[in-house]
Image 1 (tube, rainbow, N blue to C red):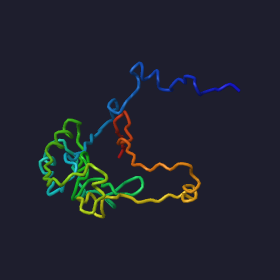
Image 2 (image 1 turned 60 degrees about the vertical axis):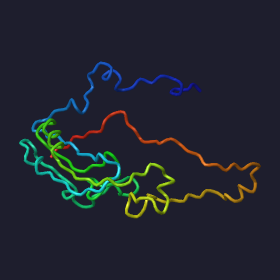
Image 3 (image 1 turned 120 degrees about the horizontal axis):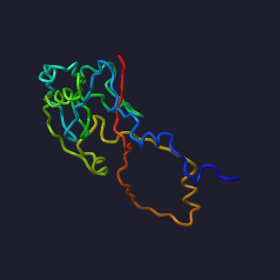
Image 4 (image 1 turned 120 degrees about the vertical axis):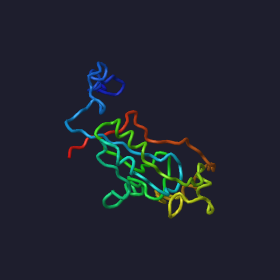
Length: 193
């Protein structure tokens, strides 16, 4: 049987449009009465939020809305396994880039200017960069319930029997580099209201 796909070039459906510059990206789209959104993100890896003042941003002509955690309906949380990430932070930021406030405006330039006008007063907190240090009892707490996000045990087979039957057992501590899902494209969205 001849292999149809493995080891053979497969033309991408969008290759011609991308190569010729004809494909439409988010920044190419325009709609009547379109508003633009921007998010104010934390500049500290770990800090208390003492105060958020949006009054200057709200007063800027062309600003449609400025929202903070107070404006999030329902549960202010999301996450793949556990909804432990706030949509917009309330009392604390836990990484550089945590979302603190958001703006909708008539133009992208006005939205960016409004973001710069939002004043957030932070109290920087100790930063944890070592997972083993973070697990210590006296480590600064990133989350209210502690620094272990989720504890899951997965058992397959009989480990003790496998150890007894093994010719060789190697015990060591292994490290892997930080891995993050990193799409090459920026994220964006279009909503019709």
